[in-house]
Image 1 (spheres, rainbow, N blue to C red):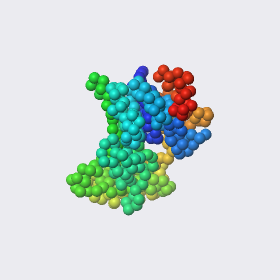
Image 2 (tube, rainbow, N blue to C red):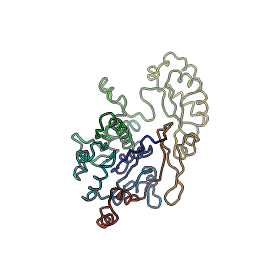
Image 3 (spheres, one colour):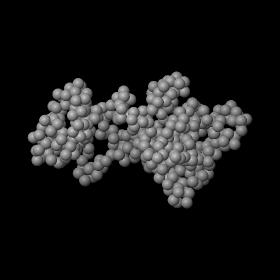
Image 4 (cartoon, helix red, strand yellow):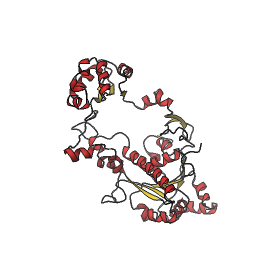
Length: 395
């Protein structure tokens, strides 16, 4: 069947993570994505571990995209962008606010060219407000949005989640915004709109009860390590083989089953522990009982016993665990691919999973500028003009 975003054309002018991640997801479900890169390439091409000079991350972040190189500071390159804007449905950018306006490519400029245009703008602090002109990366958004304060162990320095979660959350909010704007386009007579996504707001949107609890109880939530404050029991417990198991026994029935498994029927039937409020008051006692049991068994034994009794349990996966896990394989979450030189590479599968029109990898991540000539010719720019633009360093 036709992919849900087939026929949608996207111009991506973002770099690194937030904007490009949003475009990646749109491309996986059928959108044609034309990625504009500086002549030296998106910096992500050189991030983390490199193979033959290019990041293997690039193969995931830029699959299904076309690469066009443009020096956006050059007026001729800006004119090319305007010609592209007239033909696309969506523009994605994550420059510092004001950058595109300086080049005559801001929202008001582009909507005048294409009134149906949807423009996703991702930035650290948003397009308005007193902080709009500050540079912002995911780490800053995670800190300002409240996440970093809660990450880590009590009394120690706040820690990073381990991935650029602020950027990825912003990308996901951006995708939601684009899809809603496309729907609105159908309903409201073809009028486009701008989507303003701030990194800190995307993080803040995930902070659950943080602000209501402060407002009503003057409670400032603090880091709690591996436990889930106010929900009991839910923690990480050390097993005999030195590995950690994650156990969530916080439903009333689940808690009873868990206590019977660990040999504590007294706690299973204790009237004071029959609901979450009572268990929270005695969470240390409960955690000690569970930890004593896990310390006597290896991780696999704990996992088997709890799974047999329908108690939510898991362990901490690293990359090797993920690749070897049969569930990842069965769900198509580890896919075989190759790098440009033919080297095999495993890449993450596609989510979400649509039953009738699933996403797909149509083609590999592009080489730098691989589609420049193709795209320029589609705009009616002939070979001699393209050669002239190359000589001037425009493309």
